[in-house]
Image (cartoon, rainbow, N blue to C red):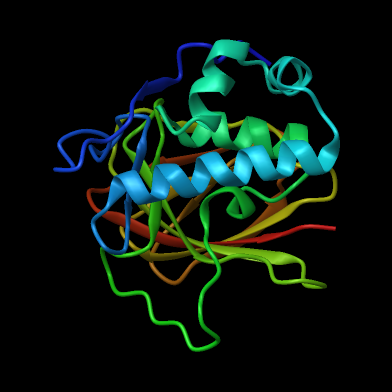
Length: 216
């Protein structure tokens, strides 16, 4: 895995002036328009999961392929991680991506369009919103994806045994294993191994999709 030592940006200011631009490689809002709150949640989650795993900061940084200084920034709430950085940390910690970004919610949960914890890709115009994180004894997370044509969102392998399910709601996209992605339109569905390299590339403006990710 390539080094991700430069994949953080300064934390979002109280006015939300940074960290919420499509394709900008950073986290976005958390449902209240408060990016700072989301960054604080991510910082606490990374620190909690690292300590639970008994890993030093240096060892976690090594496993995730990021600089120790970058990890230190993230844990202190001074960094604004990209979706790629959070995936790398999730794999290194052996936890779902959603556990790092989604705070506990009430039993009845409604997430309107434009709400929810959002992370942006630094490689493509691609934003992922966690709609439902995996509860105890369950095996799935649910994401809403918003993407624009342009660069392909290439994903490194997730935790062993991961399976992704994708349903296109609007637009068109090329989705699936890196070597054999499938073109999908509204209403089309595909599933594929998430523990191997895979891609998502929007082929039409304002492409929307739902991804359900299963974990063993």
